[in-house]
Length: 112
Length: 113
Image 1 (cartoon, each protein chain N blue to C red):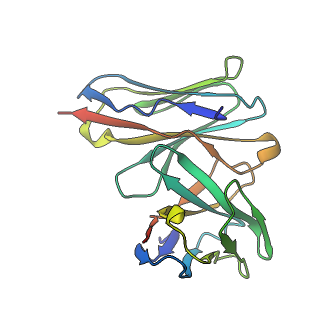
Image 2 (tube, rainbow over the protein chains, first blue to last red):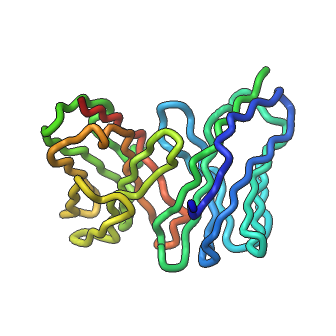
């Protein structure tokens, strides 16, 4: 069983839609929860991070962490074609220290 | 504003050949990492370093070696290349030990034939 599970998609939505991306995990020691965006043939780019449980908002993006359910989400409001990318969740903490454990990524396409 | 720089961008190797992927960062980060990314598998940690002179294995270290003689540089050595090492390799660096500020390079595409 993978330590972090993420639906690989692909996910295709119309421009302006609300997008919900999710990951589940099994290691209760994880404390930092990150979302990376990766454009084709580029390196992952840190989008947001959250420490422990709660919500964090940055413009059109909202990250949510529910440690009791071991479930994290990224919401994208008013999605744009420029949001088309692969979104990777990543987590760290506990015995793993700074080493990130990644989900396999969800490929998102926003159609104009 | 270079950040994390990797070379080469693309490389084709023959089975049994060796090569070094170069990585340098200009952010004075102590923590550096090498990941590989395979389709449908996410990113897997190969090796990491918490400072100059200190390295440790990640999830998938077999077939690779690293060194960290300076804060800036963290080269990854592939010995006796195998087709299973065909992948995209990402170097990354981090300011903190928490893992929440890791920045990635642009990647190195390696094919072993």
